[in-house]
Image 1 (cartoon, rainbow, N blue to C red):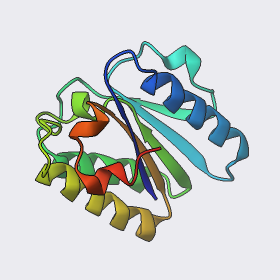
Image 2 (image 1 turned 90 degrees about the horizontal axis):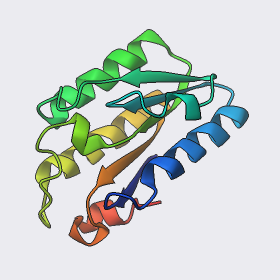
Image 3 (image 1 turned 30 degrees about the horizontal axis):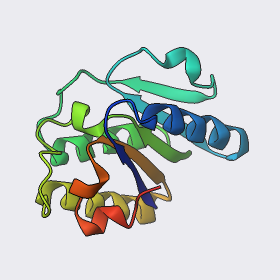
Length: 142
């Protein structure tokens, strides 16, 4: 399953994502991963969650992000959930949102395939207005 949180700065996306990850870590039989581009929130995240920090803008497109995720999954076959805060800070140019943002749609499709194959759930936050998202992403909003 692939889910998205979307909203503008200050709307509580990070707080909600951390709450979801912490709650999930208490109930899952597998491992939870939290990916962010800075360490500011590490003290808010449960110790049971594997925190992965990336550099801002480290990845230049959605394909590199998929490779990054595959690398994480290759190290641990017990991962059940991956949370990503600020996807558009991690992947450059991903969310220059237009009604038909092809890269975002391709990312969602590829993550859905990974989710089914690897039995991993993805929850990703986007810094953008919900109204600017394509319909295919809006249906996956939490």
